[in-house]
Image (tube, rainbow, N blue to C red; front, side):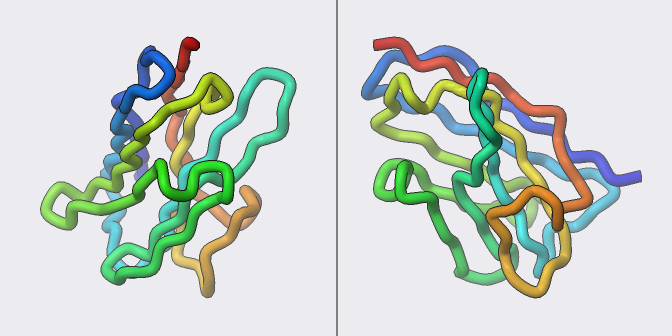
Length: 124
């Protein structure tokens, strides 16, 4: 049974940092795409960052480029999202998703495996 578990969410002040983790069990992050999505109240879910595990391919939404970094730790079978220079508009529920895809997708539909989400709240 595949399980993705996010952690690391919480509260931060504008300009601060948080690091989210997405750990997998029953599933190996090897040559699969892992994406972080977020959804703020009243807004649609949006893709934030994507990584092809086992490689160097990453991609970011324009809204977080230069501030967020997605990375992986093979030994821990975990993908991270380092969030720096946080802004109040980064406040959302953050979820990770994973699947073996032909290419990384900013859409939610292609991903079969999802975590339960972790809340990030940034105050001004």
